[in-house]
Length: 510
Ligand code: AMP
Ligand code: MG
Picture 1 (cartoon, rainbow, N blue to C red):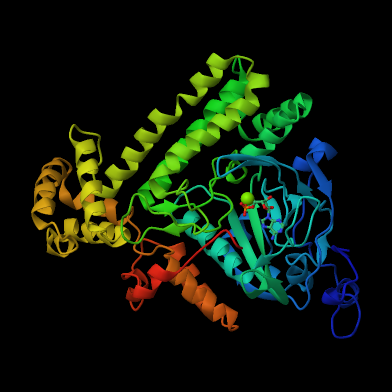
Picture 2 (picture 1 turned 45 degrees about the vertical axis):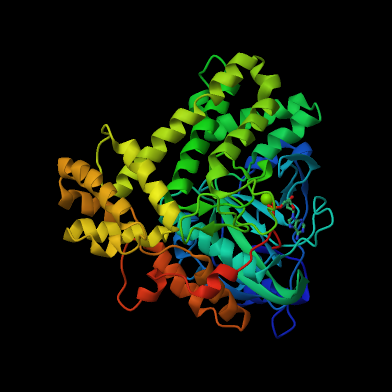
């Protein structure tokens, strides 16, 4: 039998039979299991790292959204969504045979303060399949790490996480993925009454900086070493041969994190809650909460309504990432055993960030090589964009077209400071001429997205979904899956945000 059924009402069909029984009776030959080849992976670390438990079922589950790209990544068979158990399984109402669900324990610093033990309070890892991908259900009920929480996620925030995971992947930014969202009419109390949803997240690993901090803070150095060895063995094999593999791990994580920050800053992505428990050890974007893609360029933009001090403001992200890496370094110190080596590993962050950021910005400008003057060009541009609060995605897309057509008036129109822009453009055109404008335009149109998941676009899809219409999620998902391809008839998705967008308030509440 492909699934273990919990015998809940949600997993019964109209005949009153459990779906598993019905499935087994109907099948001429047993259908292939939805996901096969489960193996131990994280679970093999042992009980100090998690609590084994099953998800809590939700009533009347229905599909809200699905990513076929992630289905392919997981090797799901054609028609998987129609398989009897798929919906129940990804809602947490039935378990894929061979999976071994668990909630992991971690700790962390939240808003710069040690928060002690946290852990998967509403996420349950089903396990890892032979594709090397772990599958996790987010919002599937309370765990021993839920603290005061209800273990649930609401439809609103689940749609945001689903869409953004896939949008980031399509932009080439490292991220956890999202296979699907399922919804349920079960009420969930937030600021107002909402309904429950489950996002199936997929990543090679969901290990966070906070997992290391947890064991370090408790002086559990054997477990700390076990965790570090596991991460090196599975994900950072190149560190194994180093004279100090743990210092090498810290350096590799610092560098991946630096490159991730460069991508966030270049694309204008604000995460909103960069607590150490929301930092992936693999350098993935993880835990989408109050995130935002910038509309008008404002370096100090705070996207999280709960972040009253602006700790996670847009331009503070690289600095916060470094601060979080310091916490990771402190946690790894018992293994690295040498403060100098730990510091040297962290020292790679800044040069890697600057180099990666400049690489991204040069590509956005269509410049194929590093040349003297390009840093000043980027600085000058950031000052101009910031002074005018110029719409960030529209600026870059218009600039790409302007370079293609050699017609800069539509870009100039975006700036109040026209003389300032003209002076900058002269500088830019000097550098452009060295590479050739046609080549530059080609690179720019593939680097500067036409479609990004602006807050108001997500909000429109959420409002429709709350009324039972999921088509806007699908439309957005399709556009964001090919963010550089302009689609006729979809101009509104690439336009300026409406006035009401500035009043959207996104907090940690999810
Ligand atoms: P976040 O910053 O949203 O990623 O979550 C911080 C911590 O709170 C993590 O340990 C989460 O698992 C936990 N958490 C967030 N929301 C809930 C909830 N509704 N129920 C239980 N735990 C939650
Ligand atoms: Mg989190």
